[in-house]
Image (cartoon, rainbow, N blue to C red):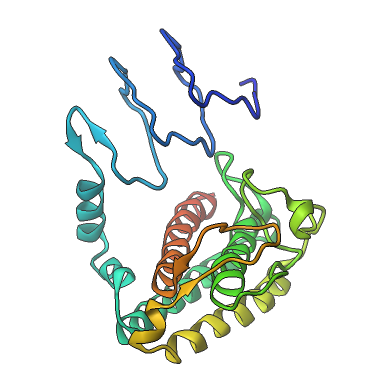
Amino acid sequence: MSTAQHDDWSGQRLDDADFSYARLHSPNFEGVKITDGWLANADISGYIDGLRINGVMIAPLVTAELDRMFPERILLRAGDPKGLAEAWALIEREWADTVSRARALPAALLSERVDGEWSFLETLRHLIMATDCWYYRMIRGSEQPYHPWGVTGSFLDPAAIGLDVAANPGLDEILEVRGQRMDDVKAAIHGLNEQALERVCEPPATPGHPTKAHSVLKCMHVILDEEWEHGRYANRDLEILLAR
């Protein structure tokens, strides 16, 4: 399969385009309208909000089905400090189990990508990055929050925020950094009250993400969602690797 990168189709109209068997990684479809499309056997994952298919709002259906499959997932939408603490305890338990499963694999497989997705080690490094973005940059207001081992999507320039794209740390090294960040988030959650959750966080003017203001509660919800969703992806890929 050939690869095309950084094509900008924003604001364009594509007529009779054939994307059969194509793979679109990290695309931005905000405001896109697809008419007379063929989505037979399509597999779509990602952030879904305000999506209609044949007149049906999809996001509530996806949320309801995921909640049915994973009832504990409801905790991720907690709006009070006690609920957030319970949600974070869930995240800690889930990731402890996931790391234990990963340790059963040969070390080399933890760096292997399944179906082109991030490897297990890259996933852990991305969660370091997510915490740096939404906790250290937003909630704590750090101007230089990024650990050099962080892994980010293509929407950010790694060099501009001090990431080391050549870094190749091992599992225990990554878990040491990640553990410190998880401890900081846990301490922050346990120190919250209702008023603190409403505080609006303004991002620093330095390069990074996010670039817009968000409440503390919104930032915490993003952190929880990142932890949960990437945990699902990691376990999905670990199943494949363990099956070998």
